[in-house]
Length: 132
Image (cartoon, rainbow, N blue to C red; front, side):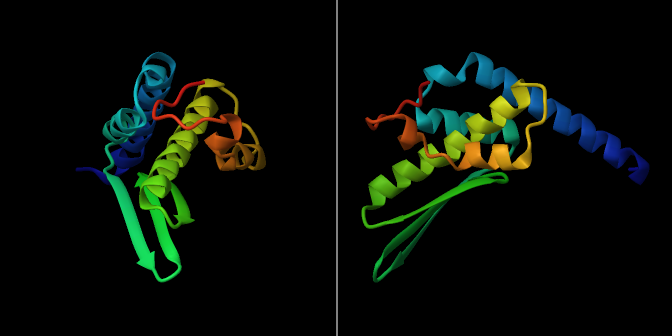
């Protein structure tokens, strides 16, 4: 394979990924559970879902990774930490989709502020389906 073709192929792959993510966010995302959405994003991004739980004497550290997106939560209850971690990484994916769909680049500080906002801040009740 000619190395001069690599940047072009990477550019085409990046454009294809962005197009697929935007299409998914606009059409399918709202009707699916958190686990289904994470699985869909994993498939679109071509990256595995990676859940890591580290136990210590004072609690546990849960981190969830899908490609370059990740979230981590520290706490005492494993199931609550895993659930919150999934919500946080899904929220970051949603922010990423909004970032793509809007067609304009927002400043990195604005994007970071939106990606750091916890979904629980905008919803008072816990639910397994992420909805707007």
